[in-house]
Amino acid sequence: MSGALYLAWRYLAFHRIKVAILVVAIALIAFLPAGLNTLVGESARALRARAEATPLLLGAPGSPLELALSSLYFEGGAPAPVGFSEVERVVATGLADAIPLHVGFRAGAHPIVGTELAYFDWRGLEVAAGRRFALLGECVLGAETAERLAVGPGDDVVSSPDTLFDLAGVYPLRMRVVGVLAPSHSPDDRAVFVDVKTAWVIAGLGHGHRDLGEAGAPGTVLRRERDASGERIVAGAAVVEYNEISPDNAASFHFHGDAESWPVTAVVALPPDDRSRTLLLGRYSGPDAGVQLLRPAAVVDELLGTVFAVRGYVVGALLLVGASTLAVAALVFALSARLRRREVETLVKIGAPRATVAVVLLAEVGFVLGCSAVLAAALTLTVRSLGGPVIRSLLLS
Image 1 (spheres, rainbow, N blue to C red):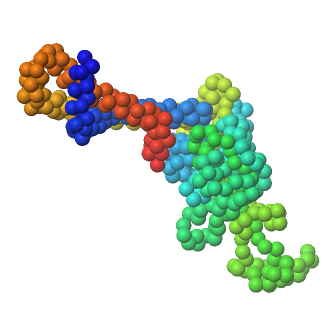
Image 2 (image 1 turned 90 degrees about the vertical axis):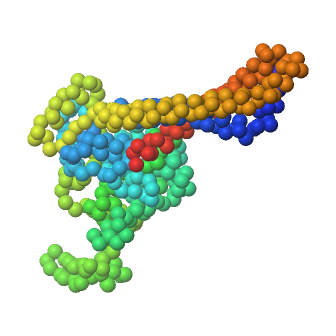
Image 3 (image 1 turned 180 degrees about the vertical axis):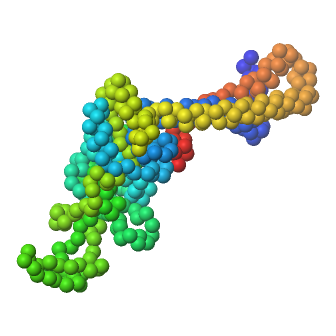
């Protein structure tokens, strides 16, 4: 028996290029359906886990999918905003706590998320270095963001302008990094977290000016007038807005307009139990609600249902291709055995039993199939451990 296996091994070693091609072809055919199922399955579990951890999302009327993707994964276009009064409205019901979210701005490739400190407690995010933000203009980075930007507490990051030439005069904001979060293996790792008021500063709703009464400000002053209340300074268009908030100028920052109308892109509602969630959904179900309140898990399930349907068609096509490939491989083995007829006859003439010859041929086939199975399993395990983030980025981009 060992002699038959040795002959099979020597034959395969001599024809190693042909054998390698067969191994790779069969392995890929076995891997593609299994790898696709593993890839989609692992990604679906990760996507749904974050959606299930978010009881309710409130936002402007429109696409529920857009609202869910932007609020949960910070991807896609920013939905239409709602007023900050919606946060107070949810809390006033007594049925849920509320956490505002403002998404849409970016620092390079990383989303800027305006929120409150309660967000960190709800998501279970721990600070690995530094502290949480406490003042206007401070930010906390996700672990992946800090690694990619190579910054840490004490450094700065700058928001990206919406357009190259911002005619509205909304300047990029330089933000001081005060903390870096521990890895959570979630979209929070690649975000830049700021207080929601800092997000409003980036949006141009709040700003600070130079002290027009100081000595270096004459070029920005149109005229100075005195009346009974004291000196009144009329500023010109050259007055400069700050693009950085520091302890020296923080007191000059102020906001315009009604605080209840300042925008948030979503409100996370956190009811304490299923009964409160059901009652809250009922209060926002009428046509005059003016906003939409949705269960993110249901929205993600609808998205995944489409993905699974497409996956079924793709797997079916791959199985047909696989059957064709296996048929071609079987034909290759059959032709190879036919071409080796004289070799087989020589083995029989020198005394080798036909059973031994059969073992040689079967061992060759078994070796090819075994190597293909090992390679396919290795590829599937690699996809299972590393492919989830890839497919999530493809689904959400």
